[in-house]
Amino acid sequence: MSETGPAEQPSQAKASPDVTPADTPDWAGARALLLAEPDLIREDPELLAQLDLRPHAPNVVDFAHPRLARRALSREQDMAVRRELEAVAQANFAAQAQAYACVVDLLEARNHADLARRVDEGARLRFGLAAGVLLLEGPGRAPAGWRGVKAGTADALLGPQGLSRMGPPLNPGLVFGEAAEQIGSVALVRLAIWSPARQGVLAFGAAEPDGFTADMGAELVAFIARVVERMAERWPVL
Image (cartoon, rainbow, N blue to C red; front, side, top):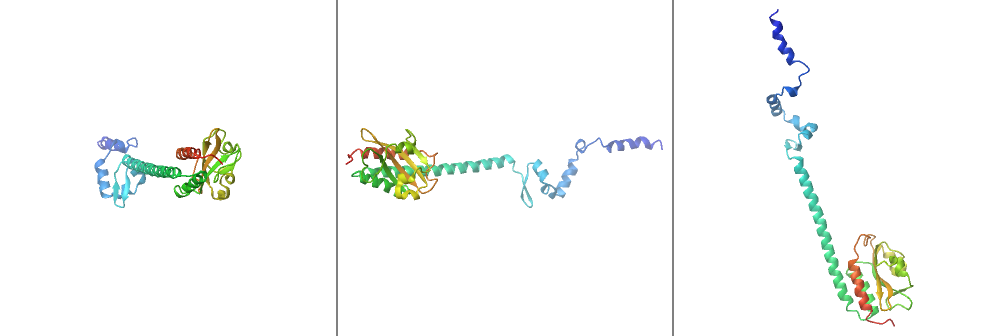
């Protein structure tokens, strides 16, 4: 009995709770188990997450590293942004082309009434808007085809010394008359015609509330307004 005592001590040391599996790895046994039971990995989401794996099909595990997935997502986002920028660029190009064509039409105007008609026609046919209107402040009457308004109207619509405004309509009945109910948003640009200058406003009205918004640039509308000023100065107000 005395001979068996020392022989049992090593086995007791191996069974000691102070020794963890990490201290005595058995990779060969683990590998054999995984080869025999591969579903143990596929059906363990926590283990898959720790190993940076993701199931691809019922019997396949996709070993693509998350960095590759993030790179693919980033590429898709870049492509979406690129497509959006291209769409905006195409829309801007189309708007510029229509603005230049509208200017060519305005240059053919024969008088004030014809100029006002061409502004409205260009707004409707070239830009798909609800109306295009020319306002002119007093004193004195407005030319035929223009809407005469009292002094200070431009400041009231644009703000004191404001040159342009894009967004929801203010007092659409004053600006667009009978077409006011069709107007959801406006683009307004100040006019200054003759010397001494009489103040006025070039007004484009869109049916959609988001047709013109405050974050839009007014460069094209302002360009058309400058052409209207030069054309209007060709003829006196009778």
